[in-house]
Length: 324
Length: 65
Image (cartoon, rainbow over all chains, first blue to last red; front, side, top):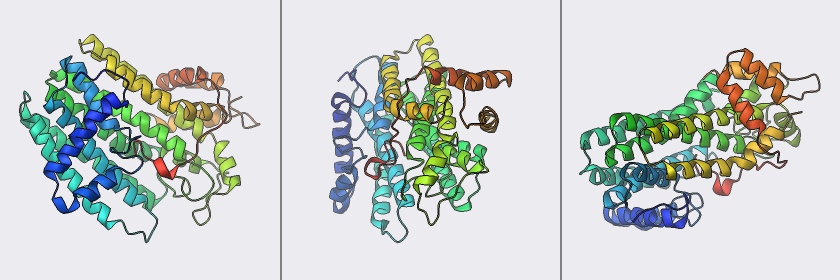
């Protein structure tokens, strides 16, 4: 099957979802299969009809760029493997953000099952790749970067007082590391050359960091207790806001309208928007270099365009927040 | 990436009324040798202005994280 339509569309994500379900059916213990499918059918997750499956879709676009032909079982399995790892990261992130006292220990058990199923799928996907051990070595090492980012995320939030450099390091590890994991694994499975693998890894790093910055911008501030600012997360816009001498701190984890107004006029949304644009330019440069190396980047261009169009409203709002 | 230098340039570009001119910020970043950010500001200037920004939505909070 040649997957050439819009990233995230059913033509791309449906075969991926079917592959994920097959992996669950064949590599997950029966007593938890149904619970795992229910978990992945929640809003935002891979099996939800509106789930974006960004990791798996990006992996399929990398495959298309290298192979220039229909994706076979190994390609779909590799895409399912990276998507399952990303879904596990979502679960850990959601459990970490859950309100104190909420019992999510069952979800942690399912997240570990997702990790093992993803690893099993990766082993089969890499079996016929030119350098199987290099592909699996990358699969494990690169994912540990994303784990390091999640560790740092929680540690900085608990410690407080994060610097902008620390916030950037956390963002790059957590999101950029995951992007590098996705593109680097599929590039190896598909048989890209050494230069190509390095460029695909850079592209994944920059594209996912861009997407994370847009998410951080969107989630930074809103009245109530759900926003990153209310939870004192160490994201770049929140840390920027905290540096201001007139920045008001949330009381008891609740953001007032006044604090939201102070945040909007602090320059923090504009700051994060500039960083997002810098990462967009980096990703575009990576695509240009990949094209120069002879890779068919059309699908990856459309993928990046889909990230950019999804960010349109958030970035435009940041631009208009205080610019004269 | 010089994230602290960008933050300082942005705060330095604020006028007394709190507003920031993207053109002025772009020039400041360029003069400070922060060309990557200057180009990013130039790109941001090309975006149309929309007034409403989405807040957090707990129902679909993580297309990424």
